[in-house]
Length: 331
Image (cartoon, rainbow, N blue to C red):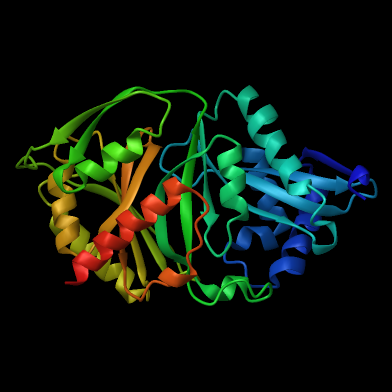
């Protein structure tokens, strides 16, 4: 059956088939609604916000898909995700063919894509094994990222689902990184995994007086997740953080993520503020702002620690770091 399937780039005729595929696997439960809207998905492919790579039968049926899309502040860092294969076509290696085409053939020819990353869900280890095989390095763990309802049709989760963040560099960018003292040991351990150079220093500066914070917040209603990108950290950082938190709470968010730049000399002071507000360690994010970022996260529910399945030693080390910081924050 797999001999009848071709891996190919998106064309306009594929959009309807991708929507049917999502409904077949997830019903109406997938939280990213663009995949149910063929016109919007077509537009996103034409503008480069999304790249849909499809597995197509000789009759034109879409039986598998993977997507590269912009989700980080830096436009040349693309996330791989929203991948699925029709049930009747699983166990045929189709997903592996899609990923090999993307990461080994297509992306290396695309000068506008300098790094890729994925959020490998932790209700199973299949994708974690795959991203590691294709040279992605685990650097972060998002606790309780996705609601269990997302996986109702497949019955693969009993609580909110964590995700392991893994990155692959295609164009190195050496940079100087400032390590918050609280997480110096953790960050040095994680940075040793990367194959592109970083100059590591300790962050020991105060936030300069008279400076302003610049931030953007995105809220994902279905997932009840708020993500805040702090492009600059100024003297008003704590007040700005409190305001954004309050707005997210009004939207019933239970997961708060804050991203700060590790190239900011006073990032340690920002981390101290975040910790006072209940945020804990999530891990470094290579090239997140073009400069590296740091994920801090605040979870307003009980994480499903027992449901987090981790494949690699690096991933287990990350889980231990995050859980230790979470438990310490509850004391």
